[in-house]
Length: 327
Image 1 (tube, rainbow, N blue to C red):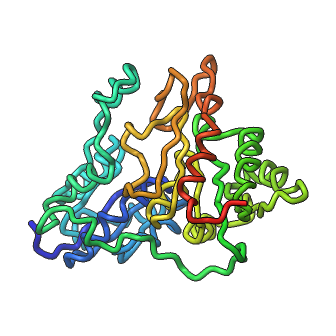
Image 2: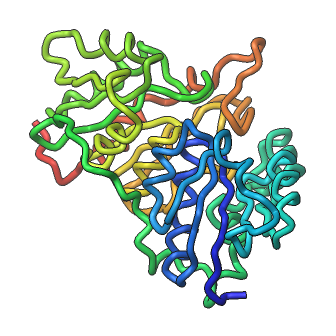
């Protein structure tokens, strides 16, 4: 099935999940396939950065125009893998390859916390769905899978800087103000500017962290687009982030990275990809972790991010930045 085809790839959301599709679309295109990606309208700007994608369509605006009759596509690769996406793909009457979600194994991992139930990295599960279109198997090491960023005008710190990602979709992925203040105090020993990244929800925290005289911080929270945030990440000397889309962007750009894990866990299959030397994972000491795939924490349970060993964050930064001159 490795002959050249026109392929519709379905991955509706979100930022991190779409970034992890990059090595798949890059290899599909490198083997001559024409790739169209269907995603939710809110994530089109991210999808347009994926290498190898010829066209991006909106789930809300464009899907009704994709008809079973006279379809321009030869195959569909459903990387969403939900009941909704499966039902819609079946209506196209085209050959469909579907990403299989390991519901049972994930449930066992969340219930037992045992590493023996660790999930295969999601990139390789995506690749399995696309395998028939790869002539010689999945070869990410041979691909240019970095995001293709458009030209954006954004003032960045003039000297090497550390990017701190304050946000997170749920509380189980986010540190609070005091934790970030402690981390910033520890990072001050490196005498490097700090770039604070987040959405409108983090604007207030970012402003408060930026304000103290001599903090060395520049607040980008709530004032930049996602693509501008990617630019901050792509040029950072070090990125410190929870389990977020910006964490996956840092890995995609092969930036030195410290990832922070609370309610979620790398064993759930969404660790930074690819793995490389200047990358560290700091895990909570909470016995409740992992709690969920998305970072949701039940109301009655303490947030595992409150038990993140912050001193290990500073130690990891020192290890990664060891070629920098310490005061």
